[in-house]
Length: 245
Image (cartoon, rainbow, N blue to C red):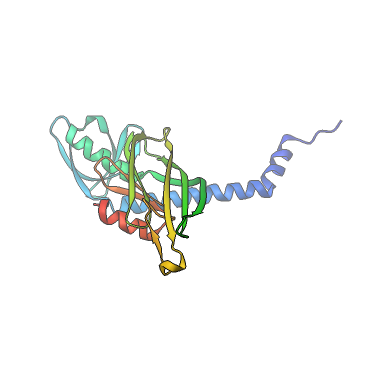
């Protein structure tokens, strides 16, 4: 029985439209990451690092290779240097710079939402309406950084009436460790439609409102905000004005 050579299977696999698309997506992702890293490195500041022997050098930090920093001297020469040979202060500076180069990603996905409504008419003829709403999001933080990166995720559920709830979670992410959790919040709204004898007015005596937006801030160890996510620009602007320092 004739069996085509293994190379024929490989050739057929490579010609598959699905695999050509997969390779294109991988290439585009790699190029996008390269562009982002290049932009961050280009904006990197010159820092002064001191090792444990007291020797000092001025350079730019351009990344890491295993346990060594990629450093560029002021004359343009590139070299590597073990991060553990730096003194504590310089190691802290270098660590933060590396974490900024490999800025963690923030991915927020809506998982579930629910809404309940009920109403009744009082003896005076006024119609009372109750609305309960709940939303659950999955929050993921990832990084390509070879160093452990301490992150703080703050999330705010905003009702649209100036009322909000504030929560946070701290964790450590690295090239092989990610942070993932769910954030759930509920709100209640109570409205009254007065009978025509009461001029047909409507009031809101709620502890929240019908609207429920989410704002997420991702911060590094120094408190700097490196990523944001929001379901409403108005909610984001409100929260940033209060907590975006």
